[in-house]
Length: 210
Image (cartoon, rainbow, N blue to C red):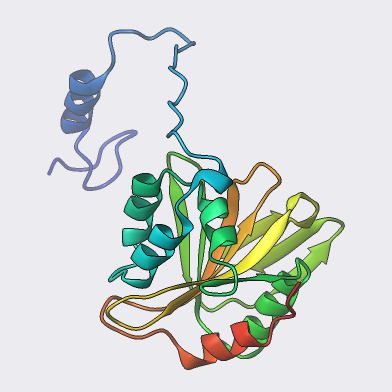
């Protein structure tokens, strides 16, 4: 490591940094980029899906990640799969239940997981939450280390969704917009090999159904 000098923080290596920039600088430095539209995965209309086959495979899942392969195999949209499983693996809840969910989790110091993202990236928060605030149409988590801002007026449906695994049933709250896109998911905090928290199941069971 070279010693600190003018404009050079202690312990930094300007030469190494310059080489890193040189090695990985793109030749094209224009301010615009051309992108290709993402190819949509083909899905069937909900009435064309083999419901019995779908639910049979759902019942035999060993891991929550098996769900993605199941959707692709049956060419079914995620929300359509949830709708087809209603009464067996899913239940519709009131959209206002999300506020109850978060406020109770905060009050009971119940650690949760929050999944939010887009096609290219998923952000995951794990841990306890503290401050829940509603401002106009926004349902917010306002914590020092985590913020979430959810537009309640853009929520079309919210569901309890259960997936069998080798560690027992994993219960999620899945929230969708009118375009059948998932907005956010909530889980009780868990790790592979460990069953989900009973307090999470109790909280989910208490939510008002649609």
